[in-house]
Length: 405
Image 1 (spheres, one colour):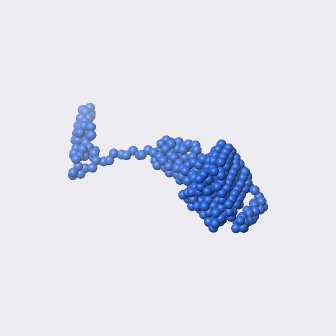
Image 2 (image 1 turned 180 degrees about the vertical axis):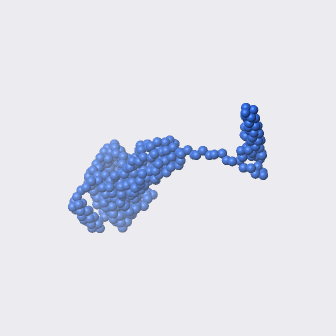
Image 3 (image 1 turned 30 degrees about the vertical axis):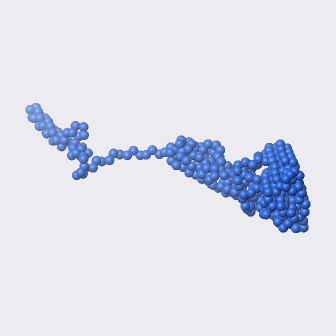
């Protein structure tokens, strides 16, 4: 017990100093950054335990622990003598060096979970909620009887629940994990004691400062860890998660901001691309509301608006950028799509005349203006005839004037 007192006093001192600083600075609005986890809380050697107690571990009925069972610094483990009593499909560490180390590692995990900045505060009743990954904190956390809590995420998603006092899980309640997420990444940091009700279907690792009680028929996919008190069981099935990703250091998230300017204009039938850029940690995703130009789409992962416009006009739409840290960022854009510019009319090319040309001499004379295209008459001959007629007419006119004189 003495080995756990010094770290706990240090943690409380650090926490108290942090609270005093917060009071001096003042309480502001919702923060735009919060510490979250890039992976599960690091439990160290405690990760292999399905049950880990401090004072005692007591079981009634045929409980099955799939994982290790440990106790430190207490000395009493009862109810695990084999059928019809409880069974341990792992190793029992009763007041040995391994159990002591596991308790020390569990305390580190507890302190890490307790230190995380919350995604949402004031949480109480969990029944009926569907929660995205994050850190949820409240005084007394409860999941009412027959209630369902849904945790919707992916394989990398992490949930941390911080209960300042107690965690109470009602009879026949259940926790449903969807989207490829797993109990590996669900943690319950409890300031005092936790109780899991009859026939409840529970998921996650309980890190309780005091005691943990699982009542008749409760099933736990996770771990039950009591840092200073007892773990009490009754006909339960407890399965410690395996194959979990290694823990990573917490990092500071930053709300997204849009950094791109206005999009360029587009032309019907021509390929178009414009990238909406944004900063933020973790990397944000993009969604569009309103009307994008026909033929253009937004890539939700990269922010690229691309495609080939199919109709002219101006379209206005809003792009929202989010990464799980409030507030989201948004910007309204307009893209004008114009008609393509008509190509200039091309003049007909001259017909070349070469030694090898298939153009006839007559055709070439037409091109050169020496022959009338419609009649085929030689233009030089016509000129001669016209001159003769003109001279003849002049002679006739002169003769008539002599007679008149």
